[in-house]
Length: 452
Image 1 (cartoon, rainbow, N blue to C red):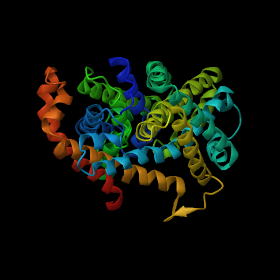
Image 2 (cartoon, rainbow, N blue to C red):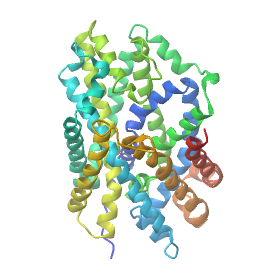
Image 3 (cartoon, rainbow, N blue to C red):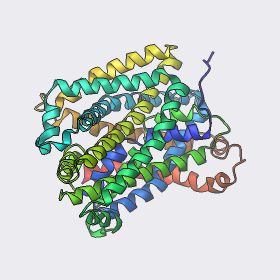
Image 4 (cartoon, one colour):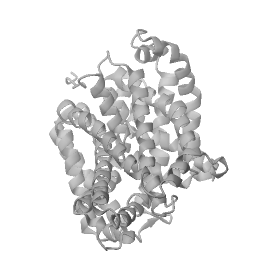
């Protein structure tokens, strides 16, 4: 006998939850530095096209599996393909997000520390901000403390359940995030020298876009929507049958792309205004921007301090909403497949994830000399999840929907039984993309690091 499952409370709650899962560190941390590394506006245009023609069909495929089955990432394949072995592959999509969360929580802890620092107006002093991030992650105990605090906050929200926890948080954090990032954009583009950063994002320089940049843009579209790791499937399993998968998908993708663009316009003009190299890489948010805030504080200390608080609060909220959806995948699996209570499942998984995360946290500091094939442990696990587990999950979902699920079932979910006009019209395009375009795109994204 299957236990009764919670559902989201309505259309806006569904969109807010999905947007919360998609909008995370990938938008506010990863996207700006990738734009800086791969040619500015040219990269942005490729990213938008990839979001429409690659990421969105995968989102729909994952959502169709989730709502049709009304089950977790493992049980979904057992429900939809009871005579096959697909559920064994589904188990990988349960493990993948949990492994990702072991190091994602570490980065969430970093954002928490930088919020604490900004609340104390710590970026307004004379301390050398260019080396602050390195000193923090090398200190050993401090990153472990913030890592633990972030994990506790995530667990508390999950303990509240679908309606009282996930839905309640995302319904107010998503609008707030957009308001905050818009305010930071206004401040950033008004800085002296910011025009160069705006032009960098608005004028495509195709000569500076390599194949690696195209692949990175495709990968960013894929990772930014939290695809291939069971989060979209799990959230879709909480959707009511009357809610539109088609509308939820394009609304989520639009919000995700819009927030990524706003994050770029919040960061890049300030980076150019401070004379910092836009191609600074992953350290752009945690290394370059603190220095930027410090330089701005020399002229406008109070305003600069407030903007720093708002920015790192936005980073923390983005990290939190994505981490919640990631943990929910494992909790849903344990509560439905083992009949474990939500409380026990949440506490068990949170403890295991934190313990493993301790290793990744220490590997960026005291254990930085420990490597795997010449790569640090933190970077190694990130590479494995991003280039192996997530693409495998995305490929699994597209093949299952494109070739294994009965075509009438797919049509029924995509069009709500044929009642949605635009879904009916666009269904042939979706079927073509999910069968032929998306699988090829996933393979290209996953193989590029090994070829170039």
